[in-house]
Length: 296
Picture 1 (cartoon, rainbow, N blue to C red):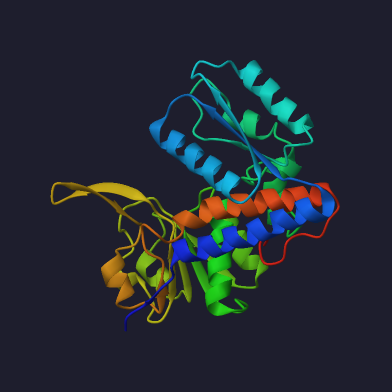
Picture 2 (picture 1 turned 90 degrees about the vertical axis):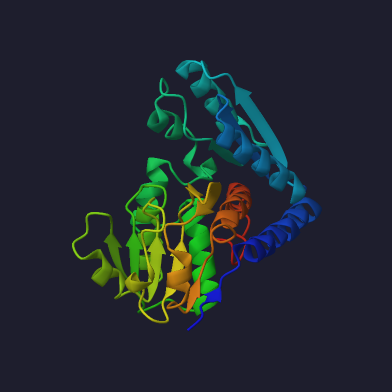
């Protein structure tokens, strides 16, 4: 068996195109331009790349992009004041504080100061609680992207057995909640799960988000299963730096029915879903119907 490759680049391009159409419609019919504010504290190289990509993607779909770059020694009071000002700004519909923050800043305090309606990362405790109780919320971008790809591949997910390997607040836990919301039978597993291989082999949908390079090999995969690899790990192989996922791609692809590659799978969907969340937040703020196919 050779697995179908779920092309995240192509899927993300389609999502961005849908967002662009809806943004143009908002401007033409209602005179509204969705706005996304991104706050970067410090000069972490990876964060700088992410912020630059987010800015370019935001402008590309016709949204307003508001960047706030602050020095690494920014005080907590100053950062909180900036967040409060963005909460009050009607031109800003989405707020993202780039993580990780410098060690002297309380990330939970900062994130929970964001207006939950503008929390397009879905990390505010109110959104976590709403998602966990099946209510309308802002949904974390990476799990939302995974859900979109799974719905596209399978159609309805009801009744499928899903195993999520990883229990982080950013991916593992919200991913499990989303799959439950689509009526999957869900198991959350992790690196300390007893007989992890046997647990994974029971999955029709296997989501790997454990943060360990190529931990999930082909003998963890049920024949014909759909494998979603959330991991992005930098390793050195044959003297060269390489990006790999949490799944050993070659062995898993020989067994699975469908699989996401790394790179080019889940990764591109994260920014696409950030734009979708900003559009959704804008529609909600203005009492307009939410965009179809771009929410959980």
